[in-house]
Amino acid sequence: MAAPQQQHAFPTELPARPGATTHNTSPQTHNSSFKSRACPNMRSCWSFSLSSFSLRTGGDQALFARRLCMLVTLVIRTAISILSCVSYAGYRRWVSFAINVVLAILGFFFIAWCLAVIGEARGWRKVLGLRVGRWHFDIFLIFAALAHIGILIGWFFGLGNAGATGTWMIMWLLIFGAAWVATWQPDEPASQV
Image 1 (cartoon, rainbow, N blue to C red):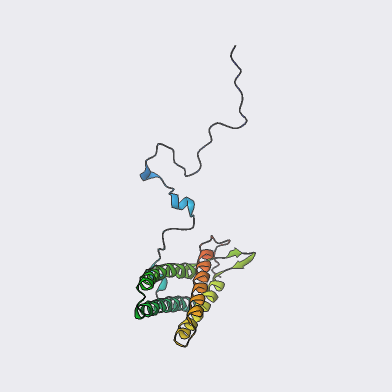
Image 2 (image 1 turned 180 degrees about the horizontal axis):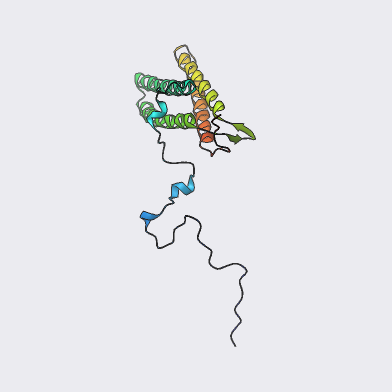
């Protein structure tokens, strides 16, 4: 006598997810990549448009000020990286020089991407229960530009290696944190009012 078939409480085959592909689909037609699943807000690796830094804004004063602050921050960070490389070369610290050159190049592209993301952010986001919008990102960009001007002045007037490095790293983390928040999906669409 055959045992009766058991009824399963759960279906053995689930319906396909929207946009999902079947196992027989070739990789060329697969819409969902590993990167898009693992990092949904990351479109590509540090890509940005050079127009994000263009000072041609068509008369939009807020956009001009935003981009000017972005450029000031990026140019001063690059100048300080170059000064640091020259300093290491002057003291014949060749290993430190080589490491600093690599970090300066990577840092330039990373900070340029972060600033472009912050500069292009639209809409409102909730951060620790507070609403953060375009105005907050603009204030952050002004703060970053002023802080980097201070770091550059301090470089020439004795801020000290520990003070300059500490401030440099704190600003790096703050810029990255602001860019990370800017990649979040806005809670509400940007208002045109």
